[in-house]
Image (cartoon, rainbow, N blue to C red; front, side, top):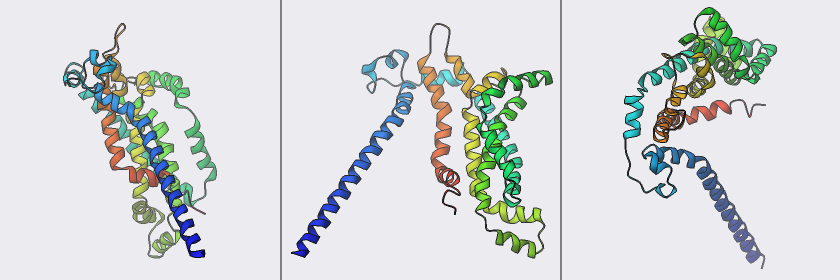
Length: 284
């Protein structure tokens, strides 16, 4: 009798587990559809004519065309805009790494709590509140429209972001390893370069990816501080918006061009992004 009751309870628990698993996958599918449907619509619309885009019945049944992408790369000449976005993103990320990584290491090892708090304040301050002062200063310097204002403004977000991520990584490195390096004759700088820095490569990769993605997608800073020769992709997309009409096909094709590199980067580096964002979450 007791054996049959045990089998019955196990069967009940098994059914409950299967039911929970089924509902979990249903929830994942629904949430994925909600987030992925706009991307799917954008991708399909990039191969449609303007007439097909505005026709609800032509959601999936349409004759694909490459004229929108031809418009993006020939008539609108998006090549220089892609290069500008890459230059601004790469340089601002690289310079921020050179400054933020040693700063994060120093704040971790010398317990600079106030400096770490200032980093948090810098992340809280909205960048839009500094656009007018930035424009005033850069216009007085005569550099508005060049690469320098864009790089500096993007560093305002990238630098504290990188430093904040690296704080958690350096806190996770055992101090015993660095003490062993000092015993072997390494200077503090040598300990940082030969021990701490190699061990923090996953954190550096995470911070670099997130900083570059922010710079690639940034619109507001480039709208105000860029010029005709330094216009980046998010600003160049306005070329498809006229006073009386919108080229929806070209707009969607340009959106695909902007989104695709970032999506590919995120897919191939998601392991580093997750590990960077969760570093130090279980410490203590």
